[in-house]
Image (cartoon, rainbow, N blue to C red; front, side, top):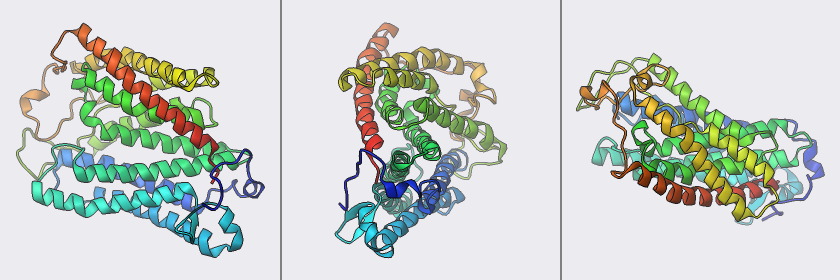
Length: 391
């Protein structure tokens, strides 16, 4: 390592250059946007058309974004290592003795490598086993880990620039944008556990409690912007609501069987969960308990996350299960082309744990709170790290 990742104050050298957005960070932002659009488009393609070819425009958008992020950060590493003289040795993290670059750039490079590695694996998987039956297939897990690496890298670079800068507004916004995209990708990864039909199951709250607090709490701890967790959740909700409203405007029809009902327009993912309510609670708690014991704070965050989320999502799930949920705003009328036609009319069935509602709530109150507490503790630690990183 060339220097420590952390510094108590901003380095003098950095204050004069952080007013402009570095080219490699700009490229990573463009790449992350392309990845997000491609992933949402690709899932809609699977739900509407079927997986007809590896060379779909959606796939190309995903891998273009990963390649752009990886190459731009690779170029930054080469410039820092060989192109800027001896000062470059004091401006990043050194790996393999000769190569120096920002820690966020290294994370992006590793993420891009994982993404590109998943491409032939995914193609082989489909040729061997056919159409995916779930999002979390082995090649998709590798892909999602790579995408997560790129987003975490972008988040880390923005946090480091925010911590170095005298005026951090631009980088604070970039940090929140990358956090919002990271929350969106996490939501996509756990889609199978967050469908409307599962909002009265304990697994819904256990999985969301294990995933979202780590992202939201880290954002609340690390960002210098006001209400960072709330803004992160709002970005997620805008993106996911936007795809519900926009994708059905484009025509599409299935090319693989079996076909359960006629589809004439692109099928989006479900309407976003109401994450903004527990995110607001996280912002308030993190601000008011900043100097308290970290485990006590994590426990309070876990309890409040699950309580606030269940208080709004449980009745909202009941609303979405009615005919109201099938209107164009909530997008509940859009289903995979393989869904039998008889499932598209009448009230939806809400799955339960097969036990009484009281027992389900007790399970949510124990396992979901435990998962959310541990996730919050991870977010507290990661947020503290992001608040200190400067390289």
